[in-house]
Every structure is written in C-alpha cells, then in structure tokens.
Length: 157
Image (cartoon, rainbow, N blue to C red; front, side):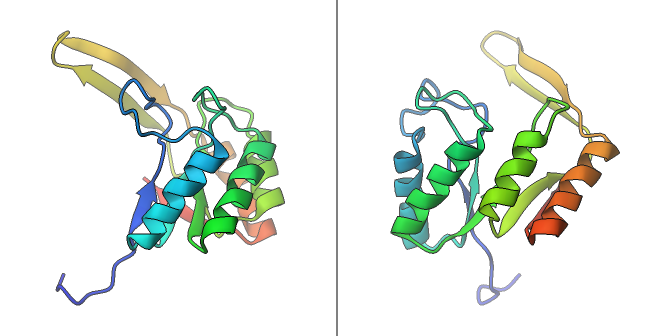
C-alpha cells in the first residue's frame, strides 16, 4: 500500500466488553457516544462502529437506544454508521428491529462462530473463554433484514 492510497478509517467507540474500569474515557450515553463520533469524524474517521449501552455502561440491544444514538450523532456530524448486530443469544429480533427502524448505512454481520478469550498474564488464567455462536440461520436472518431495508453488510470474519 502506498501513502497516497485511499483508506477508510473506522472508529469503534465502545466495544462490547470494555467498561470505564478498563478505560475511563469509554462513552456510555447516546450523548457521550455522539460526542466521540463527532471527534472521530473531525479527526478523519469515515465510519463509527456502534455498540449501544445503557446509561450505567451495560450493553443493550434496545432499538430505542440505537435510535437515540443515531439522532445525537446526526445532530453533530454526517459520519457513516455501522451498527453492531453481534450477540451470544439466539434471539436477534432486537437487532432486526433497530436495523429496520434506523437503516444505518452499514450493519456488522458475523460470518461464523468465533472463539473469544482474554488471558490475564498477572493471574495466569483466562478472564473469559467462550464460544460466540453464529449459526447460518442467524446469519441468513440478519442478511435478509439488511437486504430488505437497504443496509450494507460488513462481513466480520
């Protein structure tokens, strides 16, 4: 890649597992997430990858929270929105609902089951060690929803 090649900078603002104990700057509320999206946009990011949080920082898939995040970001900047759809749960109805309601430009689409782990060197053990199931039935349902509402899938492998 040459220095003059075009690139797309994506900023993941919250992640799904990190919290303020890990990093005090992680935004939780829609207003905080929107401010970080604005800062990322002004610094050159083209896309923000979004996980929604409750005000206490816990993850949420509530469509109304995603709608509030989108509304707050749109007040501040025109950055491209990439909604996370990942869940360890079988039920993806909330993900389908917020994709259909908000129609972000991009929706993350996990392309298969993944192993997730975090090793603690100080404890010499895993802080967590899990399988993140993404059966074909879940992938197909999310892709069908994305196609129906005009959301471009981001293929996560």
